[in-house]
Amino acid sequence: MAKEHIFTGNFLWGVATSAFQLEGSPYADWASWDFHLSENPDVTNHYIRYKEDLALLKELGVNAYRFSLEWSRIQPRENVWDDRAISHYQEIIDILVSNNIEPMVTLHHFTHPLWFIKNFPWHEDSSIDIFSRYVEKIVSKIQGVRYWITFNEPYVLLLGGYLEGCMPPGIRDASLAVKALRNILTCHSKAYEMIHTKNPQAMVSVAHNMAALAPWKRWNPLDRVVSKIAKYFYNHSLLDAFLTGRLAIKFPFKKTLEIAVPIKGKLDFFGVNYYTRIHVRFNPFKKMSVELRHRDIDGYGLTDMGWEIHPYGLEKVLRYALKLNVPLIITENGIATRDAQKKIKFMKRHIDAIEKCLKNGIDVKGYFYWSLIDNYEWLQGLDARFGLYKVDFTTLQRNPTNAAAYYSYLIRSRS
Image (cartoon, rainbow, N blue to C red; front, side, top):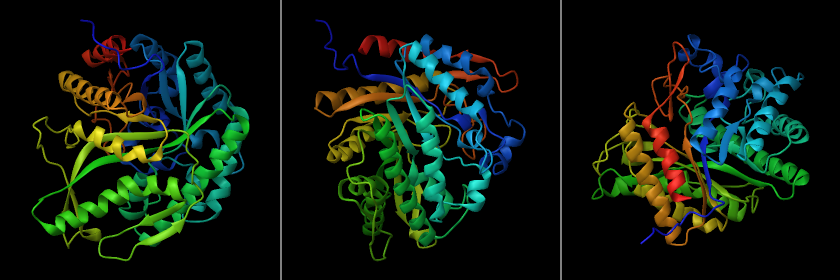
């Protein structure tokens, strides 16, 4: 008996990338933030070799491609716009469209122009006008895009930039973190309106990093408490804000803070980035009394970055997102490993999880594997090998892996 096809013809089979992680930028805050970039400032030289890389999409057989615009190239100085950079990204879009590949464009993927992060960081209200001008410029110039991501993983940006201080602007201040998040979500609202003014049929979202969160020791009531708080904040608080226009921020053993954010209903689909399960432990000696750990409980192993492989968690977080009542798209899912067979098993298990979701009536419209080629990984350098295509960072040669061939097979067999 022939296998029933669960994935419809308009399902988005794609790969995801970010501009800075492939091409770098001398004008970006990250260029001087991480010493790993000093020896490879152009990373894969994708800004020059983009046609070569885009040809790999056709080889894979994907029908969608998520990529970002590097803001610092487009606006290298506050009052300077580089129209050649905008034309460069428009050419990428034109190539995709000519090959029947749906572009999904990310406006903000962690990096900023250096002048922005120095003078108008997110906790300053002036950041709203500055970012909105950038979006207005893009929306007025870029043609041929239906799917937009305004911000990639705003909570990761918040945690890294304002609580841990490991990402620009390198601040450790919870009160400033709240202001920054409010301003970022306000910018999403403004971007949503600008995009829809130009194209009422546009599909606009954020890409929200979600994780399966569990207590380190289920018998420990303190582990259960901090796990529940972390799960609500990290996975659910943004979902509720899109439903109610109010963001509830709960820190362990502190009073819940509620702020108004103008994002109610401003969502056409929901982008889910899913990678792992995290175990949460109460530790009074850690910031906010929370310690995060990875454990190989299922026996699928850990990635090269030490993350637990937990495909069952994908269905779990998609069920969380059902409350939004919009289509769901997995905008990132991938594994850092040099072992192609491990990469193949990771893909199959997660796509099997999506198939189960579809059979159970969960409205999943797409899957984007991270990433097309090996790239720079934030604060990890060039050793985290996520790519379907391997990059020799000495010669910059791109070489296919067995995982690329297997992804092509999965697309053909399930479409």
